[in-house]
View (cartoon, rainbow, N blue to C red):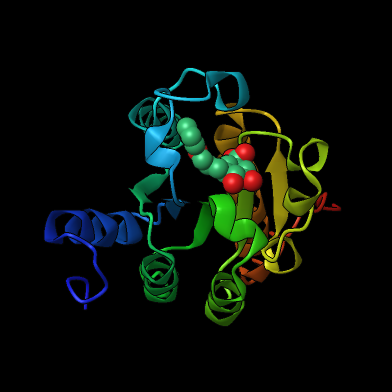
Length: 187
Ligand code: CA2
């Protein structure tokens, strides 16, 4: 149930309503230390705080008629549990696993197990930074990766994931029989 899934009751009601209205439901997860955004290292991670970023994601989702829930934790196991529990409640996941990107087989396995399309986001360009940041355990199980676009990366991920889900849902809909063309009646 929703409470066991770590989803607050008010939010679970919103998610149920979103499902009933055939809205896409996306889960946005932020990993360790991202709660410090805007307070330190602005030259690397920018000036925006995590609440600023979340507000812009929620605003853009609202404009597109998408329901989103955003969550941050410094705990690896919590991310694993939230990913596992996303099944049945969400259609896709956007995740910045932060430093766990480069270390966590557990998060990779959870994403593979839950089989929800997942987009990996990084504020900085991890490929331009230290060697140890070049490898992502997540990239191999992600739909795609956005790295280096700052907070805009989350909005690009939202757009890309929604486009993917809409295309998948359109492809799986039964094709309606083409309407008979009116034929010219012969006298
Ligand atoms: O660029 C990204 O988004 C990262 O995922 C951020 C992680 C880093 O370990 C990854 O290699 C790339 C670090 C997040 C730490 O965030 C801070 C924010 C403000 C001050 C200090 C750390």
